[in-house]
Length: 486
Image (cartoon, rainbow, N blue to C red; front, side, top):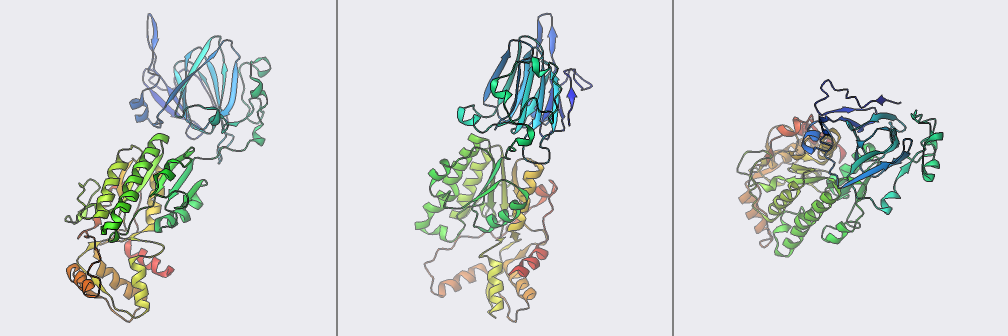
């Protein structure tokens, strides 16, 4: 598929900046107003605020390159590079041609645009570039968001300018064009190994959320890596800094020190801080350095629970060590623009959790004592994974989002009672206050075991995430489905 555009702006207002999409996903044509007077012209070649507002990715360029072409007919390409670029013309004219060399349905799709100073094109990584100078002394310039290096060039993907399957109608026939020796010998499209998509890295692969993410992303993302402590150990920041983050565009941190009671013990506080705060600082630094979208999981423990319902904008008021570390991590993650924080409560997933424990006690005919003065809603790890996937796939605004099941606020006693009811257990659940429960535990031989303070109210307001088009699942329906898997 080929599209030929011209430098005459297609916008009805050529004196205004405009951006149009093309048949190649992510390849955008920008029409740049030229402000002329008797001396020549002036243009805003890169204007972050205006361009991003119109839909250009905020691609954070770090290097500006220029290509001077002494004679008409100088032709370069096709080179697919491991970075994004914004190409424009300083003087003269070119034919720009792009072929999608990325793995996927759009592989081989072609777009051509004749360009002068009034046009620019945003080229996402993995799309092959080809350019032919149409006038002597043509200079074009491009901003890129990675520094060039010989090592980076080794990850280019190439295709042949003369490939009839690509089918670019070069204004100056290639037989009369000036090309490099390397460009003459690039492979035909049929021989090209497609450019791999950017990688998604998930930390905490063996945890409840990590397992849910692996089950989901393995079918929806062709280039996801799920890492455990053997690769990245959050107690050892050097394993974060030493990992190869090139080619990663999304990092999901599903790892944390989540033993809220153990975090209160003096011997564990440093470890909780190392995993939940110090490691997160290193992850934020990595994300900023490589422009990676960082997804981080937060907790209702960042609040003291005095409000019955918590919004994303509530000020932090943690009561214990775990809550303090999670609040500190949220502040760190928020310092990087490209972040999603998903705040959860009462997580249930694969492995040890409250619901699984109650189901086991019910099966053994044991009647547990459960607190009835802590209130909230369950959050199933599969739903957290689905929410993450939704935010990333839809390009929802960066920021913090609450996620839990939908439905009425309940107590832990209510949930335990419902588990016994749904499993047909013969026993029953005994309600008790938090203070009474702690007194009972102390009386059963564990007077010195630290216990973290719990928020009384953990219900999360779900308005913000539903406004993105995500529909949280009904809590009772999810509970039934989960129990059926045990």
